Image 1 (cartoon, rainbow, N blue to C red):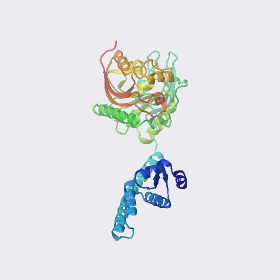
Image 2: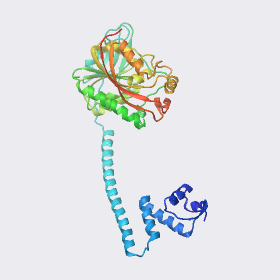
Image 3: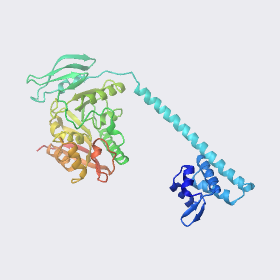
Image 4: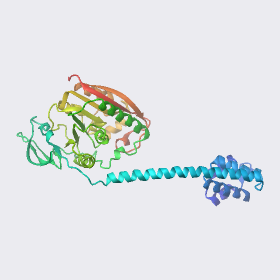
Length: 414
C-alpha cells in the first residue's frame, strides 16, 4: 500500500507517517524514495494509536514497539516488562487525575467566590462628598461654584445644579458632576467591557505589572491621610479602582473621564465593594476642569497621559498644574516609542486630535519640566510584540514599546 492510501485509511497526514517512520515507530519496506505499507504496518499503527490513547509518550511508544518487534509477546520476561510500562503509566495518569481533580475543585471555588461578588446586592450610595463642595470652582472666572436644588443623602450630594454668576453651569446627576463638555469625536468610545485589559501580550503584561508595583511602592511610603488624590482618563487604565482595596480610604479621590458612562460603571462597582469613601466623580471631555486651585496632593496616571495625548494637543499636566499644590507629588506610568518609528506615524493617523509628539518620553518629561515638575523616569520593560486591539492595532511588531514608571515633584514653572 502506498503512503497516500495508507494516510487516507487512517485519516492522518503524510508528515505524521514520515515522522513515525523516521523515529522507528513504523517500519515499512522502502524502495528508493517510495514506501510500501503492509498489513503488519497497519497493525503497528493500530497499536501506536492505541498507546497514544493511553497517553503514552513517543519515547514510551518506541519502547513498546521495540518489545513488540524484537521479543516474543509470550515470553514471561517480556510480558513483565510490558506490565511494568502499563502500571507505571496507569499510576502517572492516576496522579495526574488527582491533581486535575484538585485544580477543578479550586476553579469551582474561585467561580463560586467571583459569582457571589458579581451577584452581590449589598450596595451603598455615593455622590459628591459634602467636603468636596469647596473644591468645585468655575473654570472660567475661577470662583467657587454655587449649588442649587441639591438632593442630599447621608453626606453626599446626589443631584443638583452648579452655577456661577458669570453664566457657567454644570449639573450633579446620579452623584456625578457633569459639565456638559462631551466628547463627540469618532476616535474613541466608552470601554465598558474593559477590553483594553484583555490579551495585551505577555511582554506588555510583565512590564505593566512592574509599573503598578512601582506605583504602589511609592504610595505606600507616603502619608496620604486627609489628602486629595487625582486620577483621570480612566476609560483607559484605572489604577485607583484596581488597587482600591490596598489604597488608603481616609483620603479624597477625584476621578475624571470624558465619558459619564465609564464613570457610572466604576461608581456602581465601587459602591458594591466599598462604603463611605469620599470620591468626587467628574464627567468632562474638556481641558479646564471645575476644580479649585491648589487642591490636589497626589496626581496618579497609569498611562493616563498617553490616553490624554490621543485626544488633546498638550499633556494634561499643562491643563491641571494650577490645581496641584506646591508640595504635590506625581506618580505614574508612561508608554514610549522610538522617535522615527512607523508605529508613531500610524498612531498619529489613528488619533489626529492628539499630540504631535505622541508617546515621546523625552517630550513628555520636558512638558512636565516646563510646568514646574521634575520627573524621575525608570524603564520597566519593553514589548516588541502586542496583540492588535485599541491603540495596539497601530504598533508594528518588532518596534520597541517601552514602558516607564515615574515619580515627580514640583520645583518651578517657566
